[in-house]
Image (cartoon, rainbow, N blue to C red):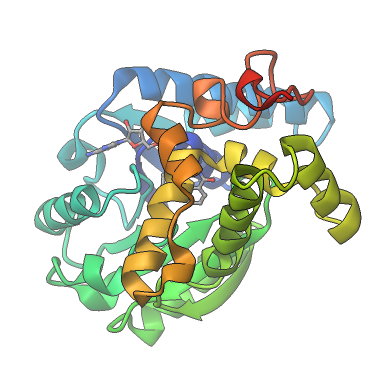
Length: 296
Ligand code: NAD
């Protein structure tokens, strides 16, 4: 594989494009929004400069990486001549089904179609294509250039050959792939999201404040950051979407999203990406400032 396409240039798409381009792949980065593409290229450039400053890569490697990325606003233009597509568009099932139906029509029949979905069924996504054996989950973690794990999710019909290829490819990117089966939330979010939801319930019920909850989990459980801070980094809309998939998929009320999370997303307080969630991020992401809404 030499040429790959990434669909969606948001939080995850820019990181996925970055790691493929840095490993020498030719990347077509596709987004419907020109603004998202410009922001993604600026983020990749900034992250590469940081690596140059830390002497992890040279200035020349930074330039080569950036030159390996071409951008497109149309899927059919962007997937010409690629061997793999990694879809990282918004976490919305109708949108993903539409994109995969379209991809199946415009990409050559041997192209592998991977999705970075956090929770949507790979089997369901594969069912709208004529190549369910070549549809697979490739779940990178945020921030992609730093986090080692890739959860590789086999849909009901994903072939052994495609699974092996994607496992090997992930290793070539310097990542550690872990193979899992296709059930709601897979492994990562099935375990992580109930913890985040419980932290939000703990705040909602007034058991403790934002800083107290995060401090207990950081210092008490040796987590690198508290669950509320992590939720802000992931995006509260993404957390809500995943909890809804778990709730619908298992039909178990233990996954019901906390009403506070629903309210925050409805009010547009989605965490780092909108400047406010449990914390205020208008000062940048280095220091923690509890949002005015949660100050005592
Ligand atoms: P995001 O909102 O930051 O970015 C999504 C991008 O998709 C936007 O730029 C949007 O313009 C673009 N888009 C929407 N419709 C499109 C279309 N039809 N064609 C092309 N582009 C389109 O979202 P994100 O956080 O990067 O999440 C992307 C995917 O990655 C989701 O499936 C999410 O569940 C998954 N994911 C997210 C995280 C995380 O921490 N945020 C972690 C792992 C996986």
